[in-house]
Length: 279
Image (cartoon, rainbow, N blue to C red; front, side):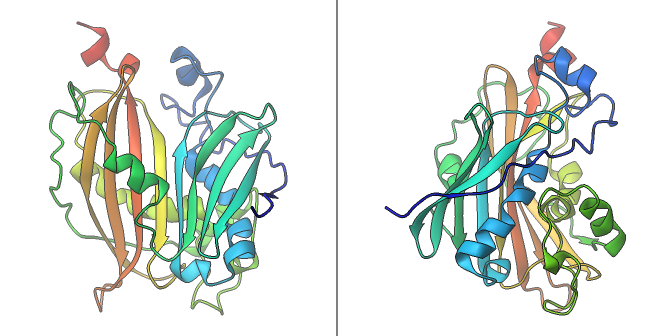
C-alpha cells in the first residue's frame, strides 16, 4: 500500500463567530452541548486542495472531486491536519484529524466523477425520515428557480485574509480565465437555492453534515456569471437532528453546460426548535 501523505497542522479561524444565534456563535453552540462556536466544514475543506493538486495534478481543478462527511466539531484556532491515503491514480481516501487523533471529517477525493464517493454511498444508505417538524414542507425533487451568481474578487480577497492554505491560482487570473474560487466561497456560491427548496418552520440552528464538490470541466472562477439551480435528494432524521440532502449545479448561462456540482447535507438541531422542545 502506498504511504499516507500528511499535511501540515493548521489553525482555522472561526470567521462566522459574530453571527449570533447560529452554531458558530459560542453562546448558542455551548447551549447545544458543543465546546464553543464551531468551525464550518467548508472552511476545513480549504486545507485539502494543495494536497489534492499535489497528488492528482492541476487537472483536479477541472475534473476533480472532494467528498467529505463531517464527524466532529472543532473550535476557533483548534489545530487540525489533512491526510491522504492513495487508492489508485484517480482516487484517494482523505480525512482530517485533530491533535488528539480524533477524525474531524472523512471521505474521498477523485480525478473524474466518482459514483462511489463518500457522499454518494451515504445517500444510498440514507434512512427515510420518520418525524420531521422543522422540514415538514420540504419536497424531495422539487426544483429551485434558476438564479444567477457571481463571485467577485473582493470576496476572494476577504477569504484569503484568513485562509489556512492558499494557492497561486487564487490570485492568478490567467490560467483559468479568472481567479479560482477557494473552497468556502465556492460552496457558498451554490447555497442560494436553499431558501426555495428547504422551507423551514420556525426558528432553527443548523450545521453542515457533509459536502461534495465535483468540477465538471472547469474550476469555478471569479468575475463570471453562473446559473445556479438544485433540488432536495433525501430527507432523514436522528435522535438529535432533522437531516436534508440536496444537490445544486453551477452552469454556463449561455451554453447551459454544467460547470460544477455540489451535494450537501445539513442537520437542524432539535434542541434549538420549539417544535421539539415545547411539546
